[in-house]
Amino acid sequence: MPHRATPTTSSRARRARLIASSAVAAGLLATAFPTLASATNGDSEGAPVCTETSILPGITQGSQSFTDKGVAVFVGGDYLALPEAAESEGRLVVGGTTTISAGLFNLGRAGGGSQITPPPGSDMLISLGAVTVTAGSNLHVGHGLEKGTKKGGNVLSGGDITGTMDLNGGTAKPNKPGATSTKVDAARETLATASQKLAALEANGTLGTDSGWPALIGDGTDATQVFSLTAQQADDLGAVTFKNVGTDTPIVINVSGTTARLDSTYVAGGNFGQRIDDFTKIGAWAPRIVWNFPDATELTLAGGSQLVGSILAPEADVADSTHTNGRLWVGGDLTFGGSYSGLEHHNYPWIGASELGCEPTDIPEPPVVVPTVPPLPPVPTQSPEPTESSTPTESVTPSDEPSATPSESVSSTPSESPEVLGTSVPSPSESPEVLGTSVPSPEAEEGGLAMTGATVATASIVALLLAGGGAALLILRRRAAQQG
Image (cartoon, rainbow, N blue to C red; front, side):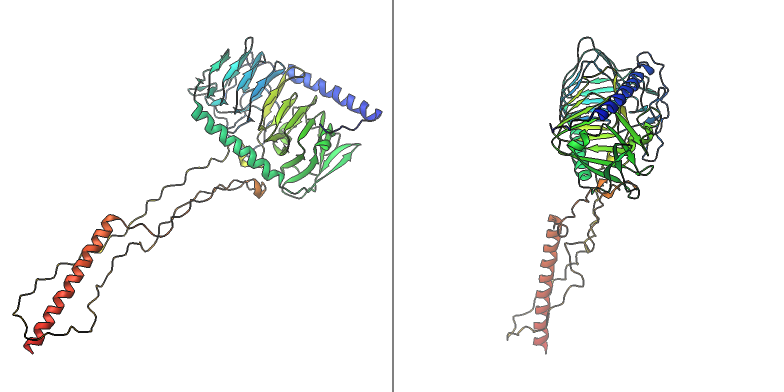
């Protein structure tokens, strides 16, 4: 891990005060909301799908506020929830095994969260490997979510599903590797592509200070505010203020380095005194911010506050011992827990790319276009058989004039090749161009339509008839010469 600069006595004191206040806030979060097992069921009937322009709530308790069809947490490797972990809001997709060793653990819906949840009765845990709830733990999925006959949440696994769990009307679907791997592969590809595209963005903001603390200062004009930090600079942030970054624009922080740490103790917006990592304001900021770690193979998420914004780490194993707010997408293993109790992931989409939104762009199969083959011309009628005449006394030289040409020839290629329609997914109107997903149109077939057996047969008949017509013309001319 990179060497961390030794803080001065005054900076130590300031950080200690921030950590103490953050720890108080974290404790409030753990006790302010009862667990879902004892909370009143929310009425999720008719909750709309959130969009990039939706005004999203802060951390609340109650009924479902929005429906989210996307993936809140993606783990390319194994997922482990330790006893300190309490809730993971939204859909969880795991490329390895899933182990819940956390006592009572809520998945899909949180007692205190954004209340942006998957649709009732949908797959809320998708794990390519086995799902194991260890002895003494209890997995609650989709508690209180209900719409008509659809209730709770499903657990879909490519392996076995074992342990104590309450699916609240949902269904356990073990040993379905085919259906599971498709979803895992799609999320893995999206993570890699999105991270690479974000990493390629040119920075338009700088790292400065506000009130003696680090500040990420944007240019205030570009459609996306972009910052580039080293792993050491990100590790040194602790408390950070976002300045001059607009009011609704996406914010990208690219962090380089193979070993990284994000230690969130205090997050402000506008100026150092305006804290945004609290329950009421986090809904306005978390959907805007994404921390991108394209190079990291080891990433630690820590701190006594709320980590504001999504995390992308396509190559990293991640140790998460803090509250997270956004999308949490990692390519390696994710260990959730290891600090104080009551850790939660709160689900917020990122507004900068539809792939990370509440209704990710589905890529439909292009329509199959069946070409219309033009009808073949009618076959000419057979010429009458000429009458036999006596053997001529002198031979007649055939005329040099060309024989008649049929008025219409048979072509094996239609006059106009059929158009094959492609499908294009537009980029979000306010997000940078590089983040959109474009689906190339299928390649058109080379050349014209292939000549079928029926077409060859028809052409052969026409050729034979034309040859027969030429022979008849020669005989008639010989007769005319004899009579002359």
